[in-house]
Image (cartoon, rainbow over all chains, first blue to last red; front, side, top):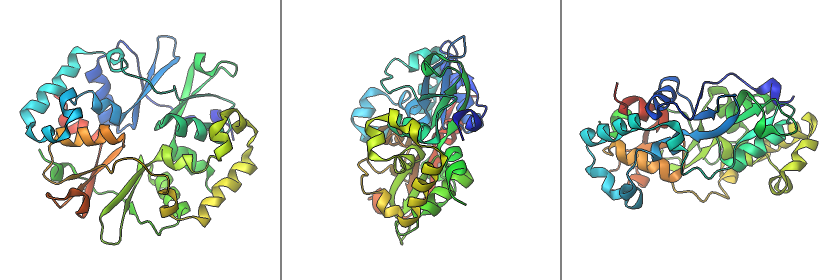
Length: 153
Length: 153
């Protein structure tokens, strides 16, 4: 079994999309993370849901989590509304994690290795065996899907 | 809106459960991670799917991912079968991340802050406001669920 047989369709966003729309997509479809692709369909980044949430937590709360209790619903709403003024590209500014990408010929062990190394909930599968990161995204593999196909029955 | 209103039911595992059964649960239900509780229902750990996969990647492959290509299906099957000899407690041996737990009175901002800080796909909500980590788990909140309730419509 190779990556191309495991890759499933998955909604993507582009760097120019509204960050609020991207967050809504994740919420509405219960996605574990956002897969960001460029205009040619090449993978740009994967943003796990937890990292997206980091964007709505103000820096001073990140440093002192006890401050979070003072944020009532009204405050929180206003912070989320701030996503409307930003794009997905803005969310990538502090991105430092390796891009979780494999080519369509990758083995399950390669996918597991990339997913674990990037601590990513999804790995993108591309069509370029020589330069996987430059290929077009064919689909994604989640940890649940990989285990579903891999575990002895 | 407080954590108790956001907490949803979620399957849990205990440290003495078989690691293979736990991986099967994650695969069958498409869970973003395993929530581990002790015999009294207190949170012990959250294991994201990507970290679970790390357990089936041999150490030498983690160090040199190019070795992963040589693992054909037969090899991979054997590695997964190795999960059958281990318990969930064994998976926790290299656990170093903060426990993503909040009490039932936590605000959405607190949940977001804990989830982002622990880089966890789920946060457990417990019944003990004074010592959240010692309380019984009432349910969990995912990033998608938090955003669903938080985003302006």
